[in-house]
Amino acid sequence: MDLEFRNLTYTVHSRLSKGKRREVLKGVHGRFQSGRLVAIMGPSGAGKSSLLNAISGYRSAGVSGELLVNGQPRNEHEFQRLSCYITQEDLHQPLLTVREAMDMAAKLKLPKGEKAPSEDILQELGLLEHQHTKTDQLSGGQKKRLSIALELVNNPPVFFLDEPSSGLDTVTAAQCVKLLRQLTRQGRTVVCTIHQPAASLLELFDQVYVLADGRCIYQGDTAELVDYLRDAGLPCPRHHNPADFIIEMTEAPENIAALSEKILNGKIYKTAKKLQEIEAPSEPTKNMELKICYPIEEDVENQIMLTNEKCTYKVAQYAEGSGSSSSLSSQSEMNSSLAWMRVKSSESCGYPTTYCQQFSILLCRMIKQIFRNKQGIYIQTVHHVMCGLLMGLCFFNMANDGTQMFNHLKMCVGIVLFFAYTQIMAPVLVYPQEVKLVKKEHFNRWYSLTPYYAALTVSKLPVQVTLNCVFCAIVFFMVGVPFKVNRFVAFCLTGNVVSLASEGMGMMIGSVFNVRNGCAVGPCVIAPFLGLAIYGFDFAHRIPLLMNILMKTSFIRCGVVAMVLTIFGFNRTPLECSDIYCHFANPDVLLKYLDIERSSVWIEIMYMLGLMLVYRSLCFIGLKWRFST
Ligand SMILES: Nc1ncnc2c1ncn2[C@@H]1O[C@H](COP(=O)(O)OP(=O)(O)OP(=O)(O)O)[C@@H](O)[C@H]1O
Image (cartoon, rainbow, N blue to C red; front, side, top):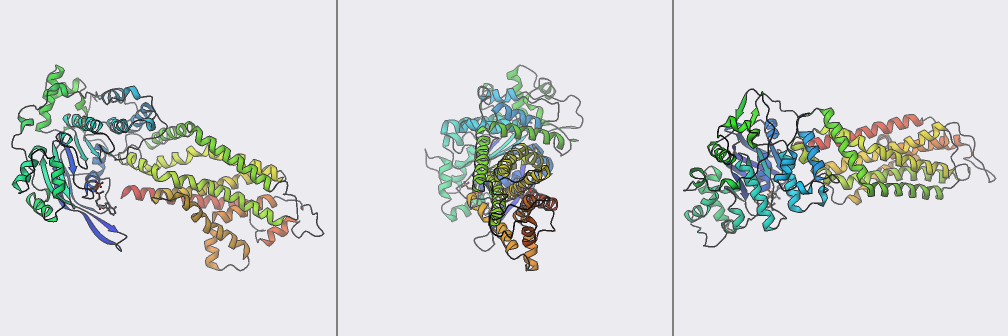
């Protein structure tokens, strides 16, 4: 697939400079041909990642200009289905082995019943011997290869990679780029950003696109770069790396302006004078060793062949080496790696699997990860049991003591705060990283956000609810609250709903904002809700209307009210009084004092469920918004 962009502009609004607009990409032009390995180069901050994000569609807000595929304006949905984006950070599902990650990717990315050539891919990418290694135990180079392997499962014709060589040593970086080169030799279009490649690495790229200050200063064959610089009056010294040289030249703004003008901001494509690769094969057939066999659908109508002159030439070379005919049909018959080129024009832009299938696959994946995270489960269990015991000891056997009214209230607030803090922190800390991974998978059309979110919500329930109930049981019995089935159920339910509402709020914060100091966020968020709860009790009879409305949004207040009603409601008999007079020995007096005697515990729980749904819906909307920009 040949990609082209015209007059591409990317504008950002800088918050620091009072919302001033800043052009990161300044009306650049360019074209990337299939079968060619393209490097986007330039000094730091030139706009390389921005260009890659804009042409891949990974970022759409602030981007304007024309994007074309094979000379036609592109359909974004269709293009996303045919392309993949590999982020600089190699984000993989933790606690899954390489093989499991491949199988999950295949299940999500291929229609039911279709088999992925996972073994071939792992073999070709040198990962077969590590197939039982957990993804987080792989080396940097192996992680990068796994990122490519996961995307090769459905064989997309276009690959975008952000800094594929970053963090790798020179040998591993060269191996990685050679692998990408092999992918292009099968007709794929591979575009990657690269910071400042060594001369040996630069040579592996067919085409370079150099950016400086958001403008194109060179576009064309790698071999032509030195001649271009010489023609521009900037001769690259002998034995000097042209990549280093052109980047050094961008230090002077006048050089950027002159070079950008000379190449017409990317409108001109500099072709090497000797088109060696097209006229005669530059590399022996034995070098083309990437042979992944994709299954071929027999009865596909309306097929279109996406190819170009150069690619067809390479097919012939490949076929000769394999000892079969060079015709395209025979290529298909031998299950060649070019099968992906047959794109069904009638195929819809949707996902290959249904939402139901996505939900069940994702749920399986998440449950597997939760139960493999033994350390996490162990820590959570210890935390809940220890906190339960501590709270039980603090308020031991106090539930029937009519002199301890304020301690009863403290206990209710304490239980609610335990659930709120415990559940808000984990998503705030974990979610920013998780969102990056989900964004990558969602952008590469593995699954839709709805089944992901549903699976995420359901997968955590079993462990979370069990541990919450363990905590509730410890406190309930140690404090000596008189047992009644409906009271105990309401007690556990209140704890769980507060916990789920807090988690929803934590997810909302963690997913929508890129929180850097997550530890400070929990207390900052909980504090106003707690304040509203306390305010509500202190001034129960003279709360202004606005405060009353605000108080209604405090799930902590609802939780405390529900807790008090649970412990002192359900026809509770008067408490024991060891003093001369116990004003609150009769539970109804306490409820009346708090102005909650007419409230119902079940309504409070329903109200908290409503708030929980609001927080979780906001989180979902926030995620959708974040992924769509
Ligand atoms: N969303 C954004 N908001 C504000 N500024 C942005 C945004 N995206 C990019 N920029 C700015 O645009 C410029 C180019 O950023 P970009 O990440 O594309 O550079 P780069 O060439 O990839 O740099 P590097 O090689 O260091 O990664 C930078 O100055 C960056 O601060």
